[in-house]
Image 1 (cartoon, helix red, strand yellow):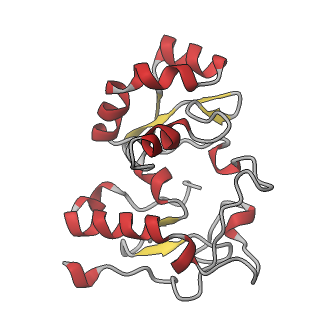
Image 2: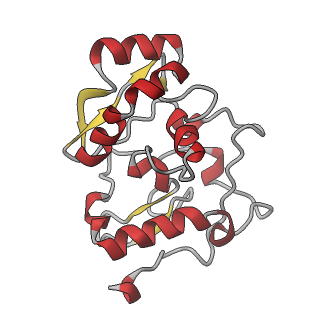
Length: 184
């Protein structure tokens, strides 16, 4: 229902992505998001156009073994990692750049990546902005411990908030499983 969407800590949350301005993309380091079947199909259907933008070692691995691993999170395969980085990371997110060129930066990204730092509460499924100290946040990223100078998340995450709301309204929010205690 439209009136049911809310982000628990949005009024007090602060967030600023500083990729390219002091952050080298650390959220993609060891990033192994789950990939849902429809996301996997979309990436696979466009893999030929994505491959040239991958790092050479990532491209070789993807061509040899595919872009998802046998490891599973939330019941779904996860993106592969090579040399510590997501196979789709090369000076930023290749999936993001390809989608951006087509007018939608989230088009090819797994939901967990597209929504970051917004996620779902494991106990009740409510949305929240990941912040250090909030809901036992385990991932120690500088952007999750923003200072007072960071903009309010309600301003800096407008696209992600709209995406979470769209997932909720479409009923596809169920695809975005709440994180488990072991998921960063």
